[in-house]
Amino acid sequence: MNETRDLSLELKRLIIDTLELEDITPVDIDPVAPLFGEGLGLDSIDALELGLALQKRYGIKLDAEAEETRHHFASLNALQSLVEARRVD
Amino acid sequence: MHAALHLEDWQAWSAAQASVAINSQHDISTNPGAAKLPAMLRRRLDEVGRATCEILKTLDPEASCPLIHASRHGDATHTLQMLEALAQGDPISPTRFSMSVHNAVLGVHSIASRHHRPLQALGACGHEFDALVCEARGYLTEGYPAVVIVFSEGPRPAAYQGHAEYPESPCAVGMRLTLDSGRKLLPHDVSQSARPTPLDVIAWLNADTPHLDGQQRWQLEER
Image (tube, rainbow over the protein chains, first blue to last red):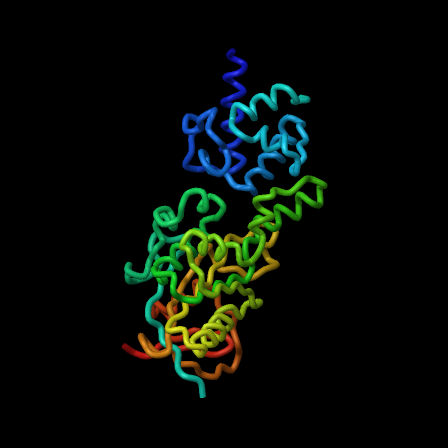
């Protein structure tokens, strides 16, 4: 459980640092809210940046065109499931 | 003979000083861009980019003027970082790549301000001020009642020390120009052309210097 919570916070910090969300703190990111468009309000460039960060940090390679990538980026919880399942570090 | 250009208003910013214009009415040096730019757009700009947007918003509040932005070196810091990443075989940041065009700051401003008039970004190897004035004259002659020009320079990357001319500190200056309202800009021939930085333009507008030398010598009509 703790590990899950730690990963959640780690991912929030990764998002904030990577995307330079200077006015956002980890508590502002709702784990079930959309990350893109509505919710946090990230855009397509953020998606590419986040994809690169996941590759660097966890060794996860995603296909930017694939429909499943859209699913993985739907919310923080979805992202967390992806990292738990596919991390190679 | 060209119709004379007139300076209706101006704004300045410097990273080094809390106030850069003698009259605070012309100064946006404190915390540039914080209030007027939405956070999700602001985060992609550095300090000089934010100041440029603040100046544009202040001089063109109705988003009705053509806007021209000049910088000799642009965002050299991030361009150099990307080149270094490429040289090492590392992937480059998609965000930085998307912002690595000379008109990136104008683009962010146009989204934030819903500005739909002409936008132009230029660099002119040290002759930015003359180029800005030349382009502004074109829009005014076409019939636009006013044009806003901004001249900015960011920080010099350490690796460029001794290889590139830069102002002492990051800075930006904006002017709203018309053909009939404000103080007249008087051009004179100059024996030796100079390459003014935004700080030189600010010193001239503050009347710290009597004229500004570029490819022409510029004087402001006495009030």
